[in-house]
Image (tube, rainbow, N blue to C red):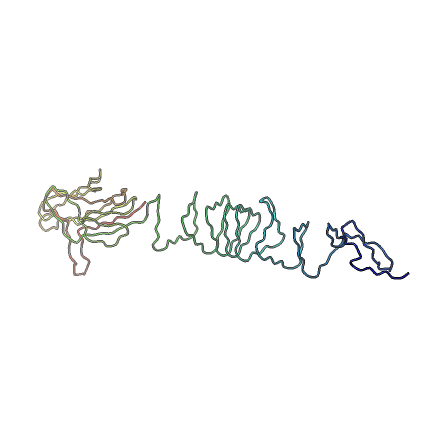
Length: 341
């Protein structure tokens, strides 16, 4: 039998599909059929056994796999979407390392340990159940709630912006408030104070009310002297006002001083105290009046220490520096205002 030669254009065009068979010489030299589905065809293919592809694999379409296992590092370029539904669950066995930014949009629920090294940005509600260790910079924008958990922070923590703490705050260690910062209670700034004095002798007519003069500020924080006698704090609070006054009687008689408190020009009830001075020949006829009041003061209101004497011979005296031994001058009045609440 002579050989028959077919030219390509003599044969009909035919496409294989999975149901076709191909006649091929087998390993034993005999002819046999092989299912076309074992080869790439225009229809569906089922490959039995392991397949090895040497070179690149380009797929125009979707990949479906029960398990996806790789023994080498996978590199994805461009954006990658895992899942098409918010209900999809993605489980990673082993360690997951993120180099760069981790952007979480929506709710995140983490059960177990979560180790983050570097910057983390979280947008939306985040629920952390279990231990969470954060190393590096943590930038939290929005509201953050920690319920029924113990948060342990080792190292420095820098917080920018307002913080609201509901419940008790137990601090074990020092609280350092940086220079230029202040403490507040119920919206009122704390720790306002001032120490003042007067270097002039004060006198007046009998049975006349006067305000004790103050012409020197020794040191003060948010407390000033206005109108030469008005002690004026800049912040609302409870204050303790203390004073001492050098009283003297220049006549050989008994006289009475009355000293009381006035708030924004009005006498404070039950604040008066009377002091009697008696000067006889050979005596100095002097006394030091010193006590304190505690009272609430509104911001920018003022208090004054008032005095009167039933005789014009009564004075609040100032004396210059003394010698033998050298000692400081004596102010006529020393007054301090200290915020206690």
